[in-house]
Structures are given as structure tokens and as C-alpha cells.
Image 1 (cartoon, rainbow over the protein chains, first blue to last red):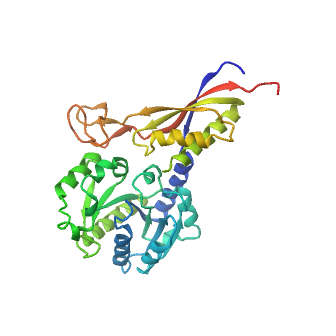
Image 2 (cartoon, rainbow over the protein chains, first blue to last red):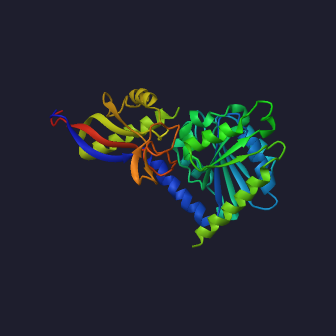
Image 3 (cartoon, rainbow over the protein chains, first blue to last red):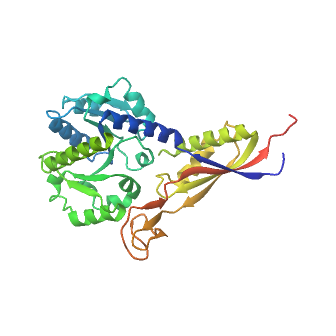
Length: 226
Length: 119
């Protein structure tokens, strides 16, 4: 062997994922579909929230959902009650969705027949942060029962998300949830982040979120057509 | 824990580069941003598993930590964040999301030796 030497290379380790994610984003843009991905800890209420959102949107828009789960199809069964088309991605032992899984799951779908596509990631606040899925908006959920400092414990996922939803507001008084502290925690790790505080169970705050989605869809299409 | 699949990606990328150049890799240098979502210790451990039975068996992974650098809109200068718990300029306190560095997950150099000519 010769003397060791250093050669410069520049290889983004997640390049493969990023290339697919970029292609997906372009596909979504040209189809005019607004794609929202959801991330949270296990048990934050992603599925309940999404079931409500799908049910609310269903009469007015064409909606569909992809749902990632480690082992079961329970979430897909629950979401299907909304009557929206739902497809399960069983990730096996993998703790997050990757762009290639989304691409495979969407094969044969006519994306231009959709207004909104929701992608529920595996319940995990760590791993999904590294993987771009081509989404238009990444939404991070936390419930009032998780503690106001959750964003400080998981700054990367909050920082990489576009909007935050605080769920289970009907339990806020019972767990003495301090809204101001939570808001400051989010602001510290993701300055300027828009926050929705709501209850999927009682419906409180859901209309505001739906209005937000409608506005973002309109903006998305305005950009796509220029 | 997704560090094993990241480690496998590193091995794959380094193997391709080595084969293209016809060299043997003794170490892989990686830039790891504080916002990459990857835990360094878990990655180093995973690398030991991922490199086995590949041309990179026995190679080292050397990680260069990259802190988050923001462009402060008020100072109009790049500043290094003190902590991920506070996206504010360390000097003037202005909050900002102008992230300049810190998301890197990049193989940037390889320590290589030429393959032996006589086998």
C-alpha cells in the first residue's frame, strides 16, 4: 500500500431521498395538490386530528391520505371512516417515512384529481426530521398533556416544520397546561411559527385550521400557475 | 433510531467514490450539522455495523460537527448559535430563521491508499 492521502469528495448522504423528494414536490406542484405531512410523538392525537380534518374537508374538497405505521393498519381503518381514500404504508421496523415509500404508495394515483393529500408520518419526533418527503407543508403536533417544553426537547423537528398544532385542548385545564410557556418554547426553536390550538374532540379551533388550509391551497395554486 | 440506515448510506457513498478512483478507504470524513437530526454517538456505533462485509470494513468514521450558523438580519452578519433551544442572534438577540449552516450530512473527504497492484 502507498502512503494514505486525503481526497476531497462531496456527497450528500441523503441525496437519493432528496432527489426523489424534489421530483415528488414538482409532481405535486404541477398536479395542483397541496400536500401536508404530519409529525408528532406517539399518542399526540395525529390520527384523531386527521380523521376530523378529512371529515370536515370531504364535502368541499377532494382529499386523500397516506398513513405510515410500524406494524398495524389500525390508523388507516380509522381514517377510512372519513370516506376519503386512505392508503397505509407499513414501515416494518423503520421509524420514519422516506420519499421512496411515498413515491411507491402513490403509484397509479391521479394526483390532479386531488386538492389535498395528507401524509401521516410514524409517531416519532426524531427520525422524520431528516427526510424530505416533497410535502408543501410540514405540520408538527403536540398535545397539551405532553408538557410545554416539548419543543425545547425536540428542537430539530420543530425547527424543520412549518406550522404547529397543539391538540387535546379540552384537557388543558385538567393538566394545567401553560399556553404562554408553550408558545415561548415554540417561538424559541422556530421563530415566527404559526400555532393552532385546538381540540379535534370538541371541534374547537378546527374551523380556523380549515380556513388556513384553504388559504394555503389557493396560494399554492396561484404560484403553480405562474 | 435511523442512524443505521444513515450509516449504510455513508458506506454506500464512500464505496462508490472509492471504486470510481480505484482506491482503498481507511477513513471517511463526514460533516454533521447540529440540525441534521442525526445523533453522533448512535451514528458512530451504527457505522461499525454498517461497514462490516463491505470494502470499507476496518475503516474509521471521523465526524466534524457543524454548529448552526444564522444570518442575523439586524447585524447583517453570520453568527453561530449558542444553543438549539434559542434561534436568536447571540449578540443582539434578534430571532431569525435565516439558517446558513447546520443541516449538513455530507461525506466531504476520504483517506485513501492505492489498491495493491500485485494480488
